[in-house]
Amino acid sequence: MRTIKTQVAIIGAGPSGLLLGQLLAKQGIENIIIERVSADYVLGRIRAGILEQGFVDLVREAGVNERMDKEGHVHDGFDIAYYGKRFRIDLKALTAGKTVMCYGQTEITSDLMDARRDSGLTTYYEASDVVLNDVTGDSPYVTFKHNGEDCRLDCNYIAGCDGFHGVSRKTIPADKRTEHERAYPFGWLGVLSDTPPVSNELIYCKTERGFALASMRSSSRSRYYLQVPLSDKVENWPDDIFWEELKLRLPPDAAARLVTGPSIEKSIAPLRSFVCEPMQWGKLFLVGDAAHIVPPTGAKGLNLAASDVSTLYKLLVKTYQQQDLDALQRYSEIALRRVWHGERFSWWMSNMLHDFDEQQVGGMDKATFERFMRSELDFFLNHEEGQKVIARQYVGMPYEQID
Ligand code: APR
Ligand code: PHB
Image 1 (cartoon, rainbow, N blue to C red):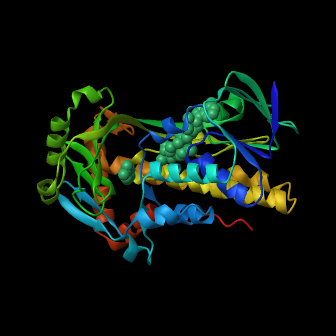
Image 2 (image 1 turned 45 degrees about the vertical axis):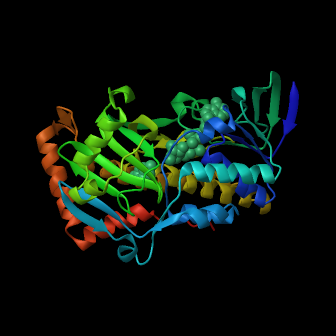
Image 3 (image 1 turned 60 degrees about the horizontal axis):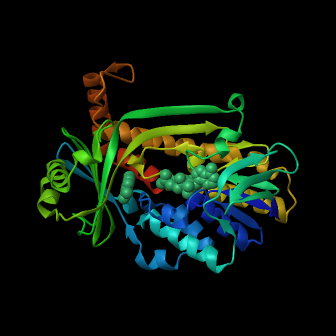
């Protein structure tokens, strides 16, 4: 058995684990990351790409902002096309100057991996049999296999950044956690293509044929999504059929500008709202997708992960630099307040913009639900106060002050 030691053991090298590791290292707090798959596999996942100001600031604080600041695009607003009627949510005007940045999660992850390697920080990729031990005791440790060798990592704290399917959340005994869940009855079919986007801002479209989103990664790379039934398969969507359906769901001017081309990635993702409470157990702290999932409709997944990272990072710094051993007790309570804001907004946006192909939605028949949603979105989109509420949540609620 090989024994190693660090201050903070981080499980998972997704954006949460990598960003936390970089921030802690800058403050002189040692950390080691244990990741189940290879770095290339992590980078092969295509995820969202809208960053709130809080996220951008955190990446700058970690000192990994060079490429993001060069290649990322600031978006001052986005569009909602509602049964053909177009509304622009002018984020900048409605929030007194706030904006979001368009920069892919894959790019951020790659930048963080490069920075970690350049700083000489240890990451065990392709680790198997990861088990968290004695998390409620004084000397927690993580055991795992790496290159055929049994390893033991002794640490003070464990950050569970291992996503929805990881081991960290399940380490909390089932009777000590509450899980809240809403699985939606549809998925998103996503296509990435090296074609110029139809617009320089995002367009969220609610149509009789279902939801569609026109997004992008750069001025030459587009990302599009279509709402599809959960049972649907990627094989049912050859490129030409995808483009044809997208055209029917985009507003006419955008459809006319659509440039099609071969897809370079195509996948179907289910939509889920999920929160685990509490987000801590003994010396274990859950971060990002390990603790909560949102449907992608509000672009909040990565951003909620970042606010968890910010909270845990600040509390760990207090613990190590000010010997404030009680600070970490507040982690779950602080993180969950912001998480629930993001959960509510993503759930609301999903309700507003999708076609619910269920007999019963929220205890009423589909047609009645649809009328309520139509009236609600009408109200929000046609009043500046309503648009302000949408804009304020889209740019992200402020991070909690940690004194
Ligand atoms: N041991 C070690 N690592 C694990 C284990 C395990 N048992 N199980 C999973 N992992 C790794 C995964 O391989 C993955 O690389 O943990 C990482 C978790 O990364 P993400 O799923 O990306 O989660 P997170 O870092 O919290 O990122 C936030 O926001 O936009 C959303 O879902 C999107 O990934 C995004 C998330
Ligand atoms: C994306 O570009 O992948 C994206 C953007 C905004 C969303 C969801 C996904 O709300």
